[in-house]
Amino acid sequence: MPESLSWLPDGTPFSTRFNDRYHGEQGLAQARDVFLHGCGLPQAWAGAQQWRILETGFGFGLNFLATWAAWRADPGRPRLLHFVSLEAWPVPADALLRAAERHPELLPLARELHAQYWGLLPGVHRLWFEGGRVLLTLCVGDAQALLRQQLWEVDSVYLDGFSPQCNPDIWSLETLKAMARHCRRGTRLATWTVARSVREALAQCGFAVDKVPGLPPKRDNLQARFDPHWQPRTSRQAPAFAQPARCLVLGAGLAGATAAASLARRGWQVTVLDAGDAPAAGASGLPAGLFAPHLSPDDNLFARLSRAGVRAMLQQSQALLQEGIDWSPAGVLERRPAGQPGLPAGWHDGPGADWSRTADAGRLAAAGLPPDASACWHARAGWVRPPRFIARLLEQPGIAWRPRSAVARLARNGAGTWQALDDAGNPLAEAELLLLAAGPACNALLAPLQAPPLPLQPVRGLMSWGPQPAQAQGLPPFAVNGGGALAAHVPCDGGPAWHMGATFERDVDRLPMTAEEQAAAHASNWRRLQALVPAAAPALRAAFEDGRGLRAWAGVRCTAHDRMPIVGPVAPAALPGLWVSTAMGARGLTRAVLCAELLAARLMGEPLPVEARLAQAMGCERL
Image (tube, rainbow, N blue to C red; front, side):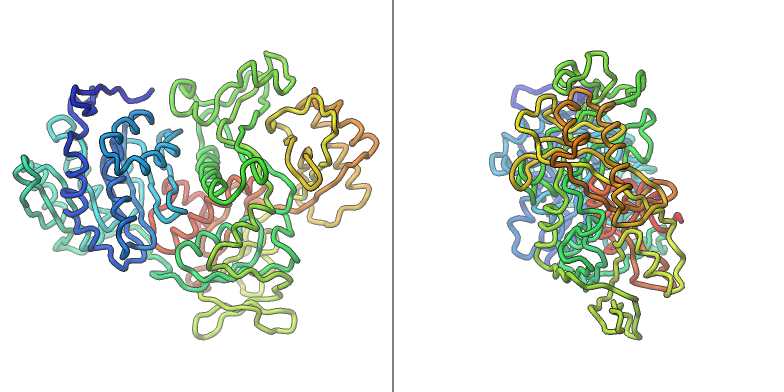
């Protein structure tokens, strides 16, 4: 349920849970004077590659908006601004805008925040602004637990929240100890409270604390610097690169293109090599594909990964693609087994409903399904044309795309630079970082380096598709999945097209498929179509039974034994600078953007875009 609020006569939001106001008329002045200036900003971040801020209470996002505005206005701003904020009780989205109306100069930014402020289930949510250069990592849950679970390193701390009398847990010694483990020596902290218990706890955690003049009518504020007299211990891995460098990406599919774009945004010079004549020449070249969250009644890691991936895909698609032409976020209807809706308990009344809910009678009818059919509606889902998406990614500044560049082997010279060599042993390109994003071909490149093989399983699939009949009765206005997937009304050359598939043949990597194999795969897709959306079968019967306009796309994907992607360094001690992003399986559109951001964050010591345990479940180290 949304957090319970009331509004004081002067328009100040008031928490009925904690019996305290969020901020008064001086809220924006406090954000600037107490927190920004209290941490020495914007001067402290001048010339930095990135700046990482941790806040202990997001509230209405005022501190974030003020910091974002200061970053925008500063010509010496860092390339990347990370703002990590904790919040146990997110306020309703509409209240966020209502509070921002008191600060007209922040209202345009508040509207951008409002557009992404949805589906805030417990966990970590990455919100994406300024083309990916301002990243808000909003963490929903108990502050102390979140601080203990994650592995951030931050440059500034905004210690905020309701007063110690109203919400003592956020100011407790245990919470402040958990906060301190994310600080580096020199991290600056600012807060508005001067309570003795807070001063003493901060000093015990290794901070040098100063009481400074406050913003009238408040007499004092606190500023502090993390400088313990002991050597802090940390379980964080040191970043592989302190500054952007050169990266060589092998593979111009979803994994390679998204990784190239994420690194290029951070200032890397990226060269992408692929044997194909055009981007997306391999398994990522399907004419249309779906992105949708995975459902699990226990909301397991697989489901949480899918939601984070869908959010990341939505953000980049909105920035790069033309809606209705290259993609459509119009939602996806998922057929479910009878009596197994797959929804975790309580989703209908909370933020889970922003993601998925039981399909209503209107959407069932639109798909030609009976009112008692078991199905869920994924509101934040849709279809994408992957080749268009990949092409736009590779057009980003800082990326050099090199087609017809078949890599025969890899080598590392004495200077620590990786080279990609052709059949004759000639270097095609070189860089300090080498990223393998070549799907099933990764192991063939790793074997001569005596690197441990990745547990990759090839999976061949065929999609049936074709031009949409002029009288296409029964084709649903949105995509439908569950035992196959149907996406109709997708713009293609010459008019709209339908797409059905794809088949799933494990441990098969032969391409091209024989005529007999294609016929068998088309027959399988036809059977699944009739079970999935029976009302659509009459419109497509001629295509499947007579071959009228029936086309095929086939590719070989790869998956890991645990169905999770593989992201990270292959063998950091023996082969430094060799990383991999692969094993997307049949969910590349849901996973690739998120994996790219995880890869970049791990390389450069940024806050991760997902919770630490999920990052560990995706890392090479688990293998």
